Amino acid sequence: MQSFLRSMLFVSVLAAPSMALAHQGHTDATGAAQAEEFWFGHPGKSAAITRTVKIEARDISFAPAALTVKVGETVRFEVTNTGRLDHEFMIGDANEQGEHDKEMAAMPGMAMDDPNGVSVPAGKTATLIWTFTKTGALQYGCHVPGHYAAGMVGQLTVQ
Image (cartoon, rainbow, N blue to C red; front, side, top):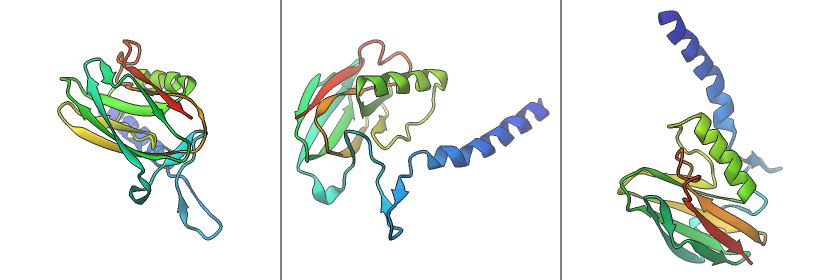
């Protein structure tokens, strides 16, 4: 048993640096840190917020179920979990949501560390600030295993 635990610790130590680097973004020519870009935008800055949208994460749905934002907007999403279960709030298109759902199903209990999402424990509120840079059809979804498949997804249109 001790040898198994030692090997698991070794694997964890080796994996930790690569996992930590997965969402750090990059630096520009001057060495200044730049936010990670997605095809539809990037994490926003508090000073640039143009509006706040309140989202309610229920067991098992979001309210509102659909939103529209504009290209160039920096939106503060205040996600309040009014349910009894822990939830997530992640922005992405249907393909990205499906891929993330597979990852979360393979690693239940894994904490959300993606720049385009937040974990929202039961009874708590979490904030995500996002700047939208391209038009398109997105979703916001919860990827606690089973939640997305059960329909915990909202539609987000960027126009």
